[in-house]
Amino acid sequence: MGRKRILIADDDEFVRSLLARALEICGYEIDIVENGVEAISQVEKRSYDLIITDYMMPKMDGLELTRRIKAEYPSIPILIVTGNGPVYDLLKSGAAACITKPFNIFELQNMVKTILERIDKG
Image 1 (cartoon, rainbow, N blue to C red):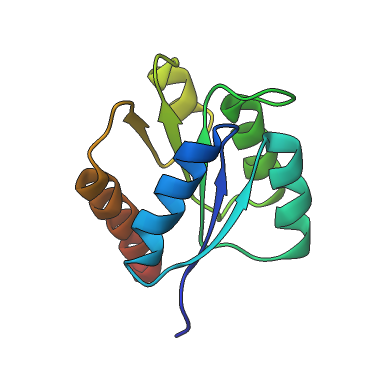
Image 2 (cartoon, rainbow, N blue to C red):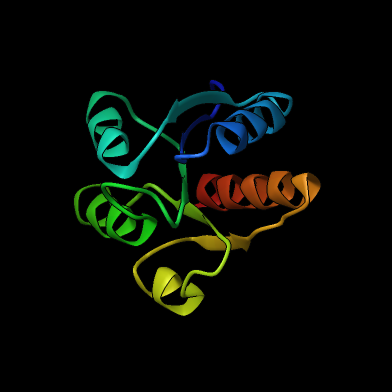
């Protein structure tokens, strides 16, 4: 099996870079976009094993992105990063998990690993 491919959607350049570096260290292939609109476009071009999205973004927030992805690609798990988002609504919309800011990088890495292992097991 090849490397797992993860798409990161976040409007904050620092957070995008931090997430990308933290996950590349774990051996994942990472693509990054700045918002939900770009994420939808990217998912139409490539397949992903996981999408990590910020909740608060311009153009399309993480909740709307999750709803759209789940409608078209129900098998792709979504991890939502939120500072103060409605965690219950995010999970209800189909997110596999939510992690709240500020988060620990190791916690994020473990959460990603757990989500991807869950998918491998079916």
